[in-house]
Image (spheres, rainbow, N blue to C red):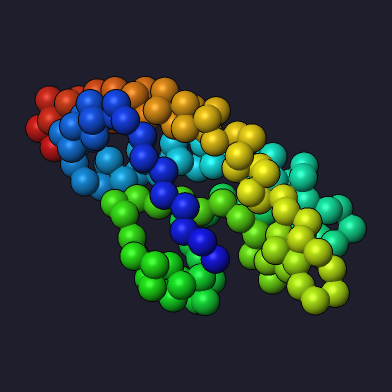
Length: 148
């Protein structure tokens, strides 16, 4: 499985603003936003996945969790960021459909979904993250004002 790294320029302000929040608050805000942005990709993948192949389209989801095998592969490829969200299928047939095997050729659905929605997903994440940071900062300030 190939590792895809995305570099986005111009988000240093977001990173600085997240750094001003308590770590757990920043992680929760990122998790909410990444889940919503990932859902764009998952929805596109569901629409591109073959409907009659082992309920593949139903198994496509957005999550922070990986299977045991996926976790070990992820560690081998460089590990973990501050907050991560994964989009894909937990169905082993998904790899066979995406890349093919000796019985049939590849029928990709995840890569085309990524290619068609990555710009919109990344834009949604950056826009929503500003809102989450503002709401979280207001909650932290209100909590501090109450003396908790």
